[in-house]
Image 1 (cartoon, rainbow, N blue to C red):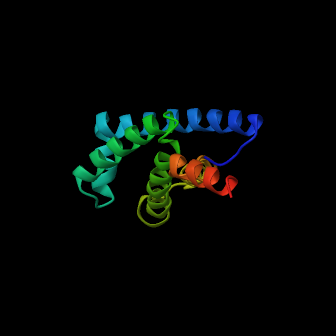
Image 2: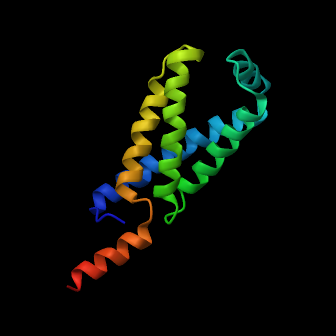
Length: 130
């Protein structure tokens, strides 16, 4: 894990909790709300993709709250949000600002938490021993 100050760590946890809440809500809506399915079909996307994205968002939300998985979950969610921004700009219409904000937030979390914290910790320990 990247070395962060106590204040930055608190900021990251607050950001992770907020992002997790948003992704949990958005993913749950895709899994349970028939209106989400209608929007996907109107955009020319298959129904299974709506369920896949909903499950990925729920899993990512949970991953954001698990310290060892937070960086990897954030990186995966950033990939989803890149697709969401593109979809808003090309097919869905509407403002991509929420998706863009979530993209920036997840990139920041992934960068600060690191994708593989154990490997980074071992590399830091090895370089400190030299």
